[in-house]
Image 1 (cartoon, helix red, strand yellow):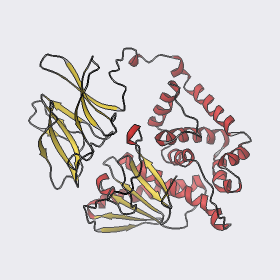
Image 2 (cartoon, helix red, strand yellow):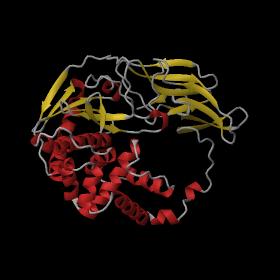
Image 3 (tube, helix red, strand yellow):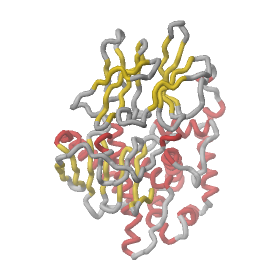
Length: 405
């Protein structure tokens, strides 16, 4: 939960890494390219706002939300007082234009709940499974806030209780998606490399996953009633940790130690074995976050790797010989309107001979840019008014066609 400009915001952060963290930016003008003709779909517990192109998406959302409501009502042992407004956009570019928040929304944010009017705002990213997860995650935030604030309203408490970020986000993850393979991968990798961060220090994306893991263990060890009790009674205590110590009869430090020990036991096979996939690895760079490697042979039959890197703060395309440390920056994005966003971590690119094809946000929509591999110069731009988002372009074998999603 982040307090920003008097708003309580629960954010569903897709990825928060290095220089591309999901911060909100103030003092910049948000450009609204579209004028949406909003319609409303009313269900028993929701008012779903959508525009006509989203009619099918709104119907799917209604089914997902009503099923999730019944499940979360049981988990929280709580019924919401009011109908929940849900505002759904058909893509992330439209979502970034929302006037529900005055600040700029970066690509790392996949949805949010603001408490003042109880609104949830979510884009549909073309992935039904992700859409369901984010919908239920944000609905879990609505339930969390309502349950925490009920005693505050009833008893006229002037200072609402403060809950740590790892708890609110971890609970939304645990009670929406349960324990999934992505969470298992993150925690296993962190434990294997000794990079788990204490819960009272963790932040960003890792607070979602560590909080999810801790609450999974805590609920299995102590029961769901103790999690409900924390939301109902933390206002009585000086801090969340004091409330947790009272209900569990253990200090927060002891609870963290027991959670860590349970993880070591659960992943004992990974801690004692060797991973054959990493025994012969060659690391060619460690600066920043480096993703989507594509290899090619130059005129001298030397193997190169082209990849996207965040090392300079802005996502850029780099070319590097496979077994050399020298690297060349081909093109930087994020500094001009015609190369506004490379959709870092969401979209790849491709190489064919001396050309690179990228899907890039330019003004109100995505376009395809063909770049010269040597100079980074834009050779050609392809777009269409009916295409808003373009991800992961690929050349055909002969280079005459490009496919994308």
